[in-house]
Amino acid sequence: MSYHLGIAVNRRAFLEQLLQVLFVGLTIGAQRTVLPALAESDFGLARGSMTAIFALIISFGLVKGAMNFVSGRLSERLGRRRVLIWGWIAALPIPFMILWAPSWGWLVVANVLLGVNQGFAWSMTVSAKMDIVKAGERGLATGLNEFAGYGGVALAGLATGYLASSFDPRWSLFVFGLTVALVALAGALVAFTETLPFAQAETTRRAQAAGPDAKSEALSTGQVFALVSWRDRNFLALSQAGCIEKFVDALMWGLMPVYLLARGASLIEVGWVTGVYGFVWGASQLWTGPLSDRFGRKGPTVTGFGLCALGVLVFPALAGLLAWSLAAAVIGVGMALLYPTLIAAMGDLAHPAWRSSALGVYRFWRDLGYAFGALAMGLVADAWGLLEPAFWVTGTAMLASGLWLLLALKESHPRG
Image (cartoon, rainbow, N blue to C red; front, side, top):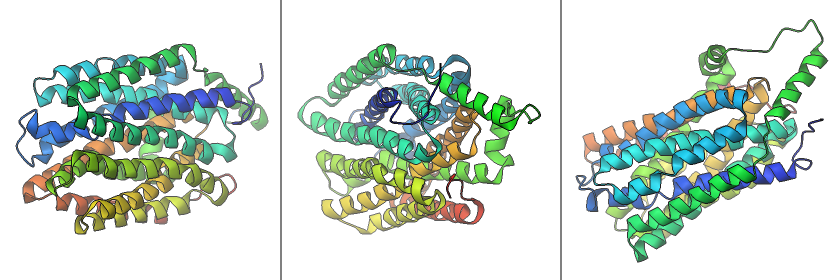
């Protein structure tokens, strides 16, 4: 059987992957508006205790980072579909834990399972797309993937904000979360094309083109991890960038609802601000992904870091729903410029024989950024007794990371 690359010739598989990443986005988005707002009222956390609130994100980031790496390697041996199914099985207990949680610690444990779900399920939608698209379509493919995923995050955040305002918050999250998980698991079981053979066929074609005397491209797990983490200058630049950009998402997830509520916003207004961020981030990737296919990866990525830093640093000086929403939109555009482009650059540089593992290592460091960022922001906010220093830490980190990319990253696009 021949395995032809391209979105058009693999339209059905591509659409299956988009549907799955939408469900993944809905799953994580369901927790972003309501749970931080319940920390004090339902679970008795001290007012303004950001380190305790950020424990949710720290546990999520640590587990998701590790599962990204594990899932990448497992999928090269067992296939993408099987790992995706395991990810959805891990998500099934989460709605029950949220509904019955007697303490905040239960939610921290639930976010461990959420990390497993995201590390397995979202990773497989990325790896599967890289398997079936052409080199010149990687930006478009990752843009569409992240559009679907973060569009789901935004939709869920807004929907659960409205539901929680009209009904019991925990029952709203339970019904929403369980419905999404069951439908997604059913879809993974009956309608997800296994794409590992595409990667294996591409590896064979490369080996044949290189000739019988070519050096083997096979790498061990340890070799891939070291190469992507520190041995290669370009992989290192991408990995640090992925780690730091998650500071922004940790801020928008854990700190922003608490900050806005402290400034007098309603739960629905919180949902709108975080929803604008998610919608702009998701929708903008429809043009930022193809932009990087045409003009290269480096320029959009560095620009994205600059825009994120700008939006985050000015946010504490703003007041009112309109101003907050505009700043959230600027941050969303910045994330859209950098997020799919970093993944596409990884796809450019990695060999198909170990590309899923390389993406797993990159996503390992990237999602550890949730934990590093949340811990740093929580400690700073608690030490100062103010929420504003968390914005300053995040914005400064984004500026420094963007400068690193500007100085260290070479253009990786095949046409760049």
